[in-house]
Length: 110
Length: 115
Image 1: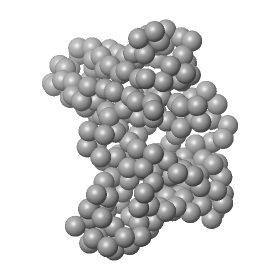
Image 2: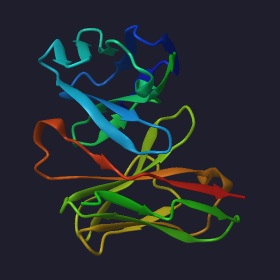
Image 3: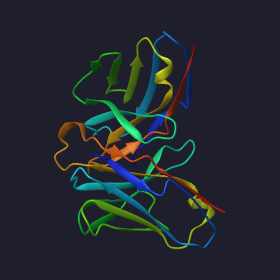
Image 4: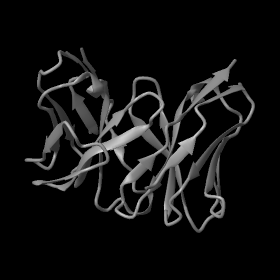
């Protein structure tokens, strides 16, 4: 079945860039997503990318997609303490359900 | 709009007890989902519904039942709670017309502990 994998933890200094990586197995995925979960809250959609795109930029966020390697990354420029959260990668399966990775906890140090 | 709300926020049960988690959304969404979140495992889909009166099994349905009697509500039931059901439960909803971004809107979660 489909599987989505992420590293568990990332620590960066405030002002640096953060790069969160994700790999997925379903080559037929048409959409891939990044969700953010702040402490004690539900998930919020940050951004998404369609599989025929290599890159998508949205203000401080850049999503890179390598479809050949089934690798997705999220780059956050000028990372702020408010960016500290858990970031989930997700792929949409053929029945429109989302398959989530285990989440990457981002810690931003002052 | 309140979005997606969940009741209760916290609950402690003893093994064998039953309970119902309530999810409500005021966005007129057709699709609703119940997930559980466990440390290091991300979110796993328990059950989902594509419309009033219909439900379907997700990835980890055993030990749970659901009902969607009204479009705005999606109930998750635990008939006989087990310690393995200790988790944080999230409800989500999305519009049938979500289109490309397929955005699901999440509730704040229910933290359940089964002793």
